[in-house]
Length: 313
Image 1 (spheres, rainbow, N blue to C red):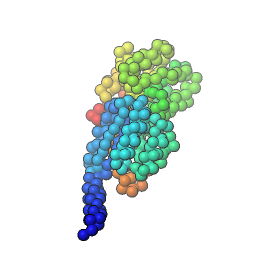
Image 2 (image 1 turned 180 degrees about the horizontal axis):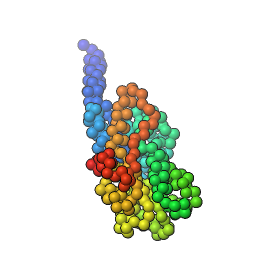
Image 3 (image 1 turned 30 degrees about the horizontal axis):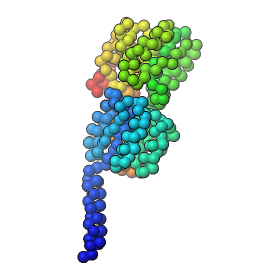
Image 4 (image 1 turned 45 degrees about the vertical axis):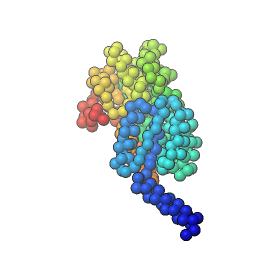
């Protein structure tokens, strides 16, 4: 038999076997998160468990910090070159990641965006909390606890963070609608740098000592402000954001040193993201936007079974 023909047949058989093995192994999904904070760890664990449940290989990557935009772009490019068929991404920067994500999509990779939408949408499905609605809910709650002339401070999370920016805008809109004459200060950032949050929380009262109400838009700032208010026995009405529920927040709500906790549900985000990625790979139609739930926890509903269940997550 002609050797060239033999090599051709053998090569075709190898390709066929590789395709069969690839199919048998299930789809491969890359998950690229913003950082390594607890919120992202929960999404990672849920994504891996959901992938295993559906027979998919899930590979999770993340930069060391949410400010590592260039590192996240490098990780995205590496995932795209590694043979993944879909990528779930929480972009660290909605503008900087738009073009690299579009380039991955142009290669035929299915894209699911979580937590923070990309600029222009990049033709991807978005899954996450409706951050503006969550911010509006927090703002309305805080507005109902203060008078028309009370000073309000917003401890922002970090500059150029789309998710917390939407929360802040929603909260500020609700606060100003309820109390148009109230002084509102929103120029202090908790930052994403470890160890800075406590000093930034204290700075709120140093710079604005007449503050009667505080809203913190990110988990690190919320926990730092909670700790500060617990130590000093209160001093301001306080509403913050986080995930699920933790004992420190539950205790502060019970004691009245914290007045509201807007809880995201990262388990729901991680599970839905993988399921949608697999639906896209199966050729199924999915909505362009899927908003996951958030729960506003106060002293009044703290002992509801649904809220108490958050402590176990």
